[in-house]
Image (tube, rainbow, N blue to C red):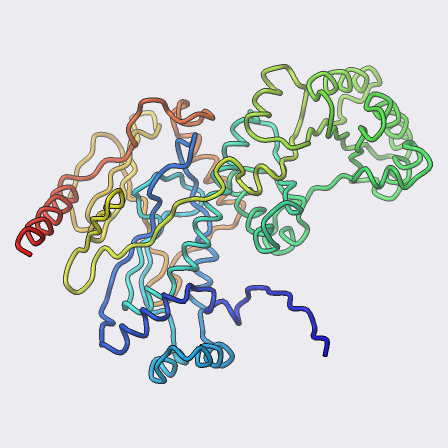
Length: 466
């Protein structure tokens, strides 16, 4: 018997099961043994990806929705029961599961560095454990893309960048999140129509070569598109001969002017983009069409964009797809979620190369007298600390008692925050290469360093005695 295909979307009904199995088996063991005391977990990135000097926080809005709405439906309970792993009492507990904790977070759009808590989650142990996978999935991916997009935007030197990546992104959900995160990183918009509807991101589109080839001539195709979309005509001119395509675009642009409209732009997707963009700009200007913009696309990334501009390409905006939508040079972000405090006190992990910072913490951002970022300091939450220069706490309370207490900014406001924040970084941090020979620009406060050293020494003494 033939069955219907399964789409496989993650939605509000099934998102509780978007977790690793071991989160649930650990939670059941905690439940059976009465170990559901209050805990605090930090979500942070261990190491900077290659060639990066900063990261951009993204994904918080989806995290807050998840935490406020996570529920185990009867279908989910039935599935878990069918695995034959879980106690009946734990499954009954999951029927009424709600997240009741408190969350502090770095706001979306702010830059951050390894070791700094991006999220600080305080909740009963079972609640804090079950949500780990979703939080990491969301923050790691969106922050990775926002950071990549920020680099591309910096390379474009003020020219607009549009996300052209949906067809190459790693799944439907990824395409939506890429559009959102790249907009936070500074992109002007996306080609993904659904992201435009869901998130209110400006949508952009031109045409494919197949459209041009669907008509007898290129000129016929241009005329048809301009007549059908007189306010959104951006013509792809490299299907056959780019300069001839530019001349055909000029014909159509003049016909549009006679009808009271203007050609928005032309797109080049292949060939020597430096030479062709300069030649196309010249023929457009000679035709009195200086208002027609030039868009460049075609497997671009931040390095290629920098090279194009250094070599004198004439361009108004870039379309960037695969390289940005997959963060191709650094396709994963090493975010982790670790226990830092519970009812027994501060906790530390001492695994080789994976030592964590104990206790509830705050991150302070320090600026110099000109408002330029100077350094970050990670401190214990209860610690009183003084700074040289202006300083403010980076982590803000976003959820208390399972309820959102944070005024969620619009996505446009988050984008503005990102551009402003990155603009406060010294120029050497905004280049495409990591700052050579520099230590991580994050300091530990005296009290946090003292607590960390004390716990390390305590566990070493225990080892020696056992």
